[in-house]
Length: 242
Image (cartoon, rainbow, N blue to C red; front, top):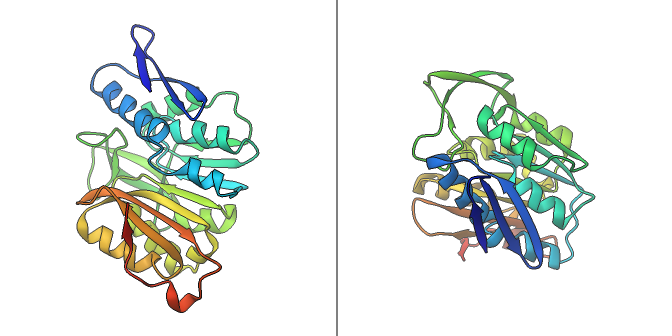
């Protein structure tokens, strides 16, 4: 259940007995904020509750595209001892993410984007018709600091990686693959943006992870988890749908 109480602009949500209260915005941004709360917490679109029930206990979680901190708050309630490292380049989102995760131990949120490449400033398009995350692009009115995603994964060694980065997921996964890092990540979840990106995600992940897709179409979700009990030669079957 999600309820919003204006004028305080607080969005409340619950999942399996866990209750949350998030600061959100007014207007169009608030509409997207509440949508993210509903998807990530109430609907558990990234299947974190099922992962916890399976006995998986991550020590480190990497959140690429933290938005207003909803995923961070959710996974910290599921795994309080886990360390969470998050990246959010758009400063209005970053400020709310700090507010919504205030007091949570073991959380670091960096106001930057992750990219496939060296640390540098990149052009950035603020949110327009997406769910409030903005996009690192070839052209943009603003610039944001960016960090090499493969270097972050190599150093942080996350057990879960969540990618909600408005189209950058393909380049990041390519860079993780090229650096030999995919096999070391237990669970990778995220959004894909385009049928061609979906196809390449399947190609990149199906041999190291069990891969399923949700929301069939050009915009949807993917979920990949390792299967140490399955021989490597049997890991390349066509990805399923949920």
